[in-house]
Image 1 (cartoon, rainbow, N blue to C red):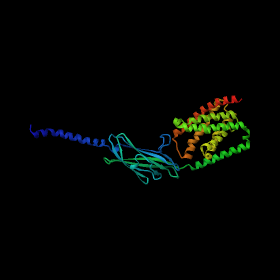
Image 2 (image 1 turned 90 degrees about the horizontal axis):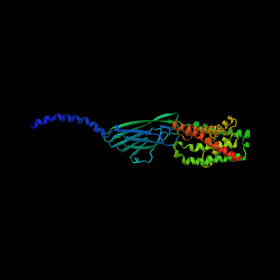
Image 3 (image 1 turned 60 degrees about the vertical axis):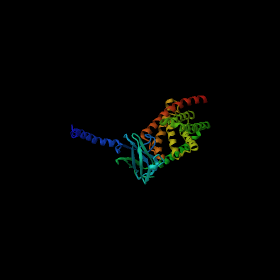
Image 4 (image 1 turned 120 degrees about the vertical axis):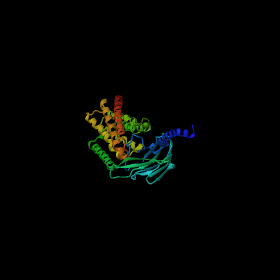
Amino acid sequence: MSEDEINMNYRPLLFVFAIILALLLPSVAYAAGSADDIDITVTIPDRKEGVFASDKLVASGSEEGARITFENRGTETIEVTANIAVPDLLSLSVPTQELGGQITQDGNTLTVSQMVIAGGESATVRIRVKPPESIPMKTTKTFHVTATVSEDGSTTKYIHGITIIPPPSWVTYGTIIISLVLVAIVIIAVRRFGILEMYTTIDLVTIALLAALAGVVFRWFWQTFNDLLGPFGGLLFTIPVSALMVIALHLVRKPGTAMLLFLVDQMVCMVIWGSNITVWLGWYLLEGAVVDVEVALLKGNYADTRIAAMIYGMSRGFISYWLFYFLFAPTAWKICYAPWYSWLQVGLAVIGGLIGGSIGYDAARKMRSAMM
């Protein structure tokens, strides 16, 4: 067989091989890494995920962290350059971080160069944004993120929307005004009906001691060990406070006992922990007032039955935590908690109140027996 005949026999095979190679080239190029491999996510605020409402900022609030993650879902290492455009309504700053030397800022636009991301790994860029002091109405703004792969120049874009809420200034001022009005009503009622004259020295000492336990000992215990139980940490405070409230009701047995207890508790917290009671005082009186009203509705049942004690603890827990998560948090600290988390905490406060009320009932009966 001549050389020409051999070449002619192999030409079909070479042709087929060329076709297969041509079909494989796109796959090889894709395996080398492209923008299709990049997955971009934006997390704001950069706090405990799920606890705080995502993609929601309150105007006049403090700085919030944001996290932009670039994940390489391919198998090959790629080099990425990213462009991050932050809404002009937000003030932008870049904290110290691992990629800090690769980040350049031009106004509200960041360029992150030469991010080397291995297959299956990710790179994270952290920023801090501050909402404006005020906006006329709720508005939606968007982050624009573009990632370009150096190897082939391919690009992927991602748009992430957030909501900025106007500062609830009228709620803030209204809260302070109502708080002061409630205090004024209590003072007028006390003077008009001579309520304080009903309390003996022993009554006042008892209330002061119980308030000190709640405001100093158990608050310190809660602040120290709260993080160990995560979202269940509130039980460390709701259970003992409810128990102390029930003990005060059972031992003192005077109208307004719960209000006076929480008033003294706030005074103690102001001195020890530096609490600002201008906003809180009237509302703390409110949670006590609810319990005192329930005592009256139950015909002077000062936690004389376990059911009554548990009802008082449950009511106090519900009012206290509902006011905190749905009024105080967005008003005073401009923080919006996720609805599920807020209601979880309210539910735990109710459970803590039930447990504390039952414990307080047993303790109060033993203490009253000892006194008699």
